[in-house]
Length: 327
Image 1 (cartoon, rainbow, N blue to C red):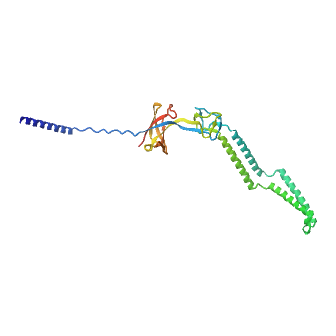
Image 2: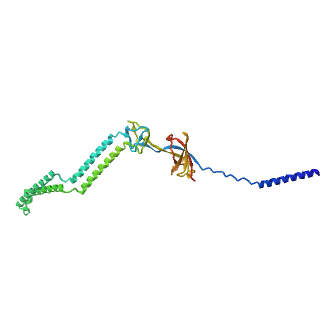
Image 3: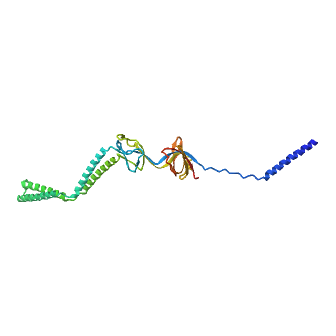
């Protein structure tokens, strides 16, 4: 009996302690829950450093390089001549076309100069002589009876009158031709000859111009791939020109899935494998409109412009691009 009573007391004590602990737990307020900070959504891609402007320059025509006027590292101005090909044939064609044009222009000018004074005097004299001969032949014809003589056609006077009349008509026609203004058809023909000759000259000048390679913009010669005496093939790059006054970073790693999150104006951080201590801020300035298939993924070209420059940057350096979309 005593053992049962002690067991009951112990059980009651345990229950009482549990109730006290529960009441104590309910009375103590819990601490407020700490909400995690959501990091900005950053898109990371691999890119490369490019000059702000660059071009591979080739010749429009083929030939032998006669002059290479630049070397690697030279700074050139816009439209400066970089390479000249041998151009003897083109220059000869220009001379021929220019001579043809000069002749055509002279022929047209003659139409408006009027007759030569000596030609005009001679034509008037011929007409006067022909008129006198016609008058004499007419008189002889009339003396032989004229049209009333049924046999006059068989007489020498009739033939002489016909010849005199033909001579007079021809002399008058020559004088009239010298005195009349140029005909519209003659002017049109002369103008057509001039236009054709001018077109030939323009083509010859264009062919000569194609033997020179000009810089399309001011910049620095990056590479020279031609020497004097070498044959140049049309369309083959012989000079590489770049504007190193500024840089841009270009990446083609962004696929159709993440390109929708990127917009022009988004901030970017740029780091470089070759310059570990350098981080440059930048901004997305261009997004390619056309996606390209690369190993099954559709990728887009994105250009980032650094807001600061560093003299250690070089063409085609590897860069890591971390883009922070605005939304």
